[in-house]
Figure (spheres, rainbow, N blue to C red):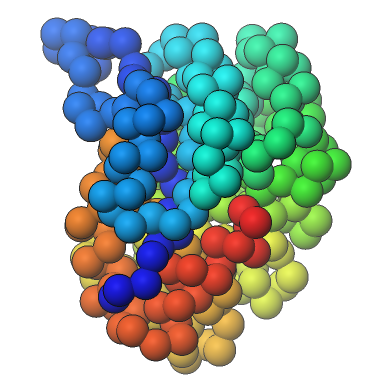
Length: 274
């Protein structure tokens, strides 16, 4: 594929070292970028003509990700190829941080609100409902997409994230990152839920970052069989946690080089992120 690409999920900022899983303090985000200049150089190298850039996150220090919101905005306002998302949290203990982040939702270049339950909170926890309502209300007010991590098990499992779809996605665009996350998530989404939600009128989208090799091919087969979903799939690298070469090759092999590839790699980005 020779056309420039659009990346619906890429991070900016480097995280502090942290002793994950009881081991020594490490920096796993080895290709993370600290500056807008470095990020733009990566976009050039990967032939990315448009990108959604999000604060890097993953350590259990809320100030780490919240503190990168201004860098994401700087990226979006310094290069018209870039749109950004703001980090927000479902946790009631982050209420003040959320207020500060959501106050930036009207800034030029902001196109999404990003959240995850990896660092705490739960989609069905009543204590998280106030912050989640506030996040989705802000997205509705500013016509933003809410970008949510999925991974198997616990609070990020698609069984749990699906409650957000049912509660909010009739009138707010919801981007489910990682195609449900892992084997179980792929089977649940591709095996029916994604298409059922689309047919029920939900504004639900996903990307194939981190997808197991079989999943994009099966996804394309199901899109063709059910006749919906071609406009809901996005290309995403999730750099520095994913890599451009692998993500691009996997989705290209499944999508081919026709209209479906144009939708995944180009057109669907515009529907969500401008």
